[in-house]
Length: 208
Image (cartoon, rainbow, N blue to C red; front, top):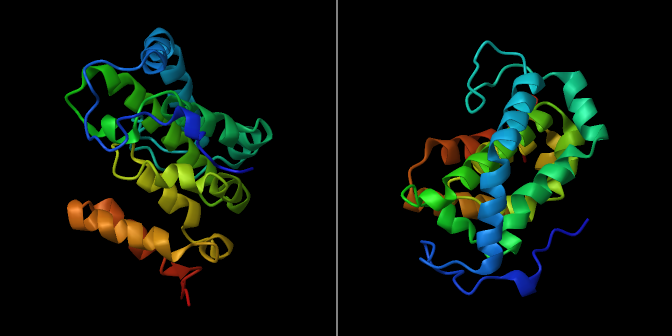
C-alpha cells in the first residue's frame, strides 16, 4: 500500500508553525467532527490501550507493560493498523498541517492532538514485540515520519516498530536516523536519544 498524501489537499500554510486565525472549510469540518465524536473515540482508544498491555498503570499515555498477544492478533485481524493510520492521516489531507498541533496554546487543536496521540499509543502497543504487526505499520512509515516533532508522540511508536526486531532494522533507512539527529539539534528530547540507542542492537547483539 502506497503511503502518499494527495497533493490536491496540501494546505497553503505548509511552512507555518502556527495555524492561521481562519482555517479552510475542510479543516473546520475536521475540527467539528472531532468535537462531536471526541468522547466516544477517546474512550475507545483508551480502552484499546488498556486491553493491549498488562500493567497496573491506568494512564494510557504511560501504560507500558507486557503486550496482550491475543489483543494484538485480534486488532491485526480487524485491520486496525490501516484504520488507525487513516484516522491519523485524514486531518492532514483536509487542510490541517502537522506542525500546527505542536502549538500548546491553540485550543482548537487540543482534542485532535489528544486523539492522534492516543491512536499512536494504540499502534505502539500493537507492534510491541510483534514483528508481523510492525511490518504492517512499517508500510506507513513516511506518514509517521512526517509527524515527528509535531507534538503527537509518534517517536515512541517509531521506536517500537524497530526495537529488537532484526528484520525491521534491516529496513531502516539512513535518512530516518538523520532526521532524528536533526530533531536533536532543535530539542534535546530524551525520546529521540532513546530511539537512536534502540536501533543499535537486536537480540542483544550489535547491528552491523
